[in-house]
Each structure stands twice: as C-alpha cells, then as structure tokens.
Length: 296
Image (cartoon, rainbow, N blue to C red):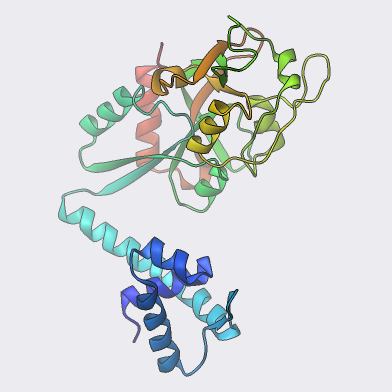
C-alpha cells in the first residue's frame, strides 16, 4: 500500500515532470523523490516514468495511476481538513480569492464576518493573474473579488465592495513621470502587459484594446504575478494602469502614479459559481450589502 507522503510525491512529480522542481515544492531532497518513485515502481512491477537526461514523462501505467489517485488524494485531504476544523469547533470554511491588492482596506468586511460567524473559518487569498474564473469552477475557491463586468453564464455577480478611479504607473525616470494627469490616447505610445487566459470583454474592461481614436494599445508578454508586473514598470519596460488603491499599498520611490482622466472607474464585486452557492456565501453577500460599499 502506498503511504500518503509517497502518493503526494508521485502526484507532484506527475505534475511537474521534473525531479528538482518537485523536490523544491515538496521541501525534500531529490534523492527522497527518486527513492519514493523507485519503491512504488518495484511494488507495482512497472515503470511509472520514462526518464532521460533531459526529460521526465509518465508511462501509460503512470498516467493511469495518476488519474486514479488524484480524486482519492483530494478527497482524503478534504476529509482530514474537515476533521481538523471540527476539532476546533469550526463547521465550515469560506475561501475568498482577491484580484485587487487592497486586502487591508477590506478588513472591515473580514472582521465583521468573523465576528458574526465564529463557527465558520474565513480564508483570504491573494491570487496570481491566472484563470481566476477557473479557480471558482474547479472548486479551488468559493468567492472571487474581482472587477466588473463579469458576464459568465455559470457565475453570479454579488454586491460591489468598492469603486475606484484609475491611475497609470510609470517609472520615475519615464517621459510621462512629471505629468499631473494622463489620457487613454497616450496609452498607444507605450508597451503594456496583460495576464494570460482572460476573456476578451473582461480584459478590455480593465485595459481597452484601442484608444478613443482607434489606435491599438499594445500588449507585451503575459505577466502572472504582482511582483513581476511592478518590477517591469519600475525598470521602465512597460507602463500599467491600476485602480487607485495601489498607491496606498505600493510606496515605491522608483514609481510615479498619474491619474487617468478619461478611463471609467473600476468596480470590484463578489463573484461565485451559481451552483455552488451555499449558506456561507449567502451570509457574506448579505453582510456586504448591509455594510455597503467602501468609500475612500
């Protein structure tokens, strides 16, 4: 029988297909990963991975084992997590993913929810810019805080938490750095970035594809995390449009923030998968409606 840790090692290697990355992710040595895989291959009597000096690939037996183990492993972890919560008197958990950076600004909502519902655990997670709707659909989170509009037939849009004007971030030595305001038409003169996998209408609502005069606003390579994004701005490689709350959370001497005068304010709201709505999601949405949107 495979031990739980060996199952985890196998599934991580099946995903990463790289012994070094798998060991780093698991915080074990590469030798420990190799040992666990060899032990399972001896027990099963067949190779699980094809290894060369350059590549690691699953064999047909390995693919079958991965497909069989993934739901079992996920279910076991969920059972253990429910037991852990029950031992603390917690009867449910609500996972909220944040696309904006202003987690601190929204503390009044989080504090109030925890005060009203001590029997439920509230988990707030800052998200990478990778397929956030997919996280809802895959049940990796329960509620998403993101900008509007969201026009997905399987998702429900709840109450708005805040609405903010737009600002343009540029490097301190950028040619626009001394301006007191910016207009959307200027965006066509500079390189921007975008996260991968966004629906076109949703991307366009954050950063339009064209200026008012029809000039294209060029995107460069995709960016998936906030650190890479702001570092590219600071190096002068790109400019980037943000909601204004970032000025309260990124005090960086090499960045200048310029108000954009002709780009609509961005509203952020709760969004969840309609079929997954439950008592916890409903309680959070009703509480936000009762408290009302934040004002800055």
